[in-house]
Image (cartoon, rainbow, N blue to C red; front, side, top):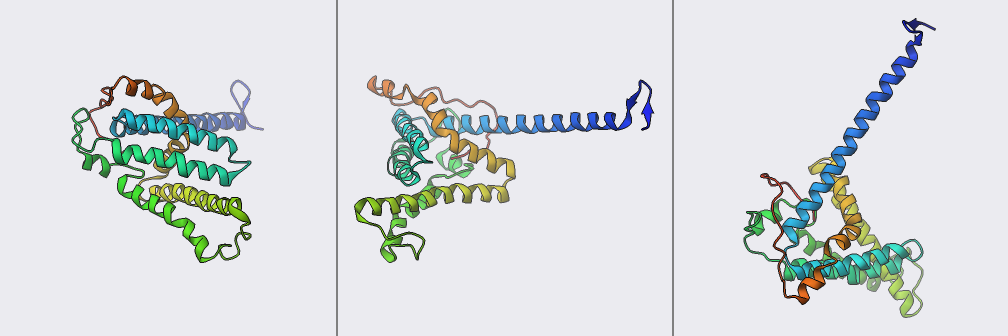
Length: 238
């Protein structure tokens, strides 16, 4: 084997250089991913969670999602029922009914602008998603077995199990659809960052909003701390 000064095999030197470059590239990619994730989380928090009522509802939502996560592998249908009927409805009620829709003086942004720059599900997209969720159990009216995909339901519990399975598919489909769409209209990292944020939001929301009920008891209806962290407006998730 050819050797260079110092008796280090050439092949080993090449391997060392290759590994160093790969490690540096991987580390840079991970740093970029985590920074993008921090940005999406912060922008989502400061733009779309001014209302303490909305924050408290997110705490309810996050706690329910965590309970759904705990049983997801043992009983996915029940997990989906919890996620949609309690976690998603409370979460979206906060956005639709309690979050201010006027001009955001703290972040110098109109409601329309914030909706336009949202990477994930803005209110218009959420209307579509929630509408699909509401009408999806109607498929069981057309065919109780979903054209042979399910066994016939036995009793009320069996019917709710089928509804839970349908809602599970709707939820996973909504995640996959928007992620792939972001791959196309933005880039792969944006899609993966958004997906990661959505899946981990329940853990993060509990840490952010656990004091929201206390603020409501003290009649502090709006969070005054929502300030812009940079001079530029980034696209944010939903």
